[in-house]
Amino acid sequence: EVQLVESGGGLVQPGGSLRLSCAASGFTFRDYYMDWVRQAPGKGLEWVGRSRNKPNGYTTEYAASVKGRFTISRDDSQNSVYLQMNSLQIDDTAVYYCARVGGTSWNKATPDNWGQGTLVTVSS
Amino acid sequence: DIQMTQSPSSLSASVGDRVTITCRASQGINNNLAWFQQIPGKAPKSLIYAASTLQSGVPAKFSGSGSGTDFTLTINSLQPEDFATYYCQQHDNYPITFGPGTKVDIK
Image (cartoon, rainbow over all chains, first blue to last red; front, side, top):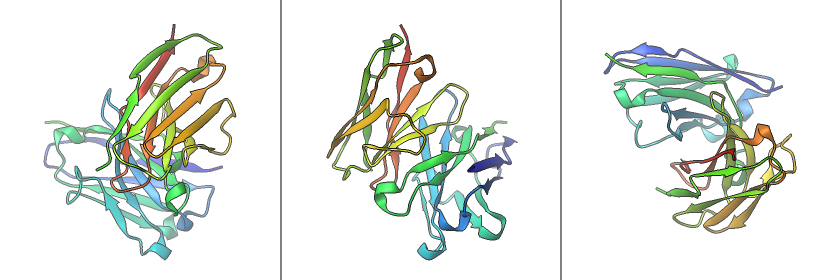
């Protein structure tokens, strides 16, 4: 059974930093791309970014709203993906989900499994 | 960026109804369109990818169709557990973008 467990959320002041982790199990983590998706309170889903696997150079993609402030990394030996968030702003307040991407080709390059999410609150 | 719109933004339906939700992309997306279900307070659940392919374990009461820029999600025989918000997402181009959601509630 695929399991994704996020951790690291909490309260942080504007301008601060936070690192989220997502621990994966139940599948061969190194084979998959991984996404981060967030949801502000009462709002819709917003794609944050993507981590590609080793055959695809461990490259990353980001939404414009977080590019230059957020960094996605992964450790295949720990079956984990991370989201380093710097220069946090009030409107970064959201539940952050990690998600496994179903495939590396465009027709499958969308989440097929999701974690339960972790809440990040940016407030003074 | 590709903009995704959904209609309606909300709808009321009864148990047993068939409902259809529409999603439109601002440009062609090669059928790389996904649908997700989210129950309040829960993580999203993946339903469909590539416009019409059901994710593993998703019941056949859910179906997707469409091509180019216009897509639909149909839910047959609505059950209490289907009352939720449904999102479309284009997975054809970066940045990946979601529609604003359609809330399906009980009439």
